[in-house]
Length: 138
Image (cartoon, rainbow, N blue to C red; front, top):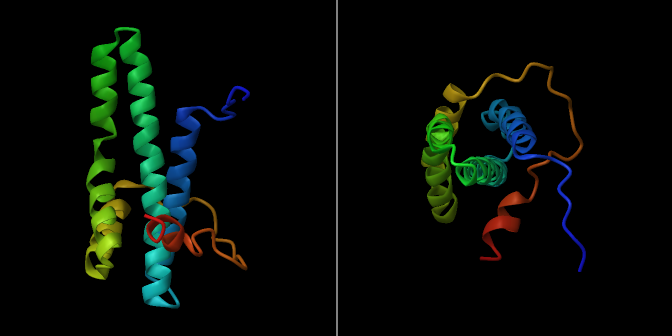
């Protein structure tokens, strides 16, 4: 087996995930098929929040290896906002609790910036089928 080469660093992954989550937030209230689309959007956001949480740990662990304990702790505190919506989304998705999903999306919209560019119309949204991918296999 060959080496795994990562083409993006943890910071780039966080930035991309934040942009994707910010893209979904305005679409959440406009869902055409509320139950199915809402679950897919929430699963999509959950996956990106998990990516952010993993990249924060990856970055903080790298700093801890170099004995930058204070910097690693400050960085974890800076990104601590990810834990609450991540936990709410996971519990809500497993139970299919739509009211909790709305609360998690409101929490995220307070923390994340609004998307800068105009929304583009897509044939298939990137979150299509995400809930089945994440939660029917487990």
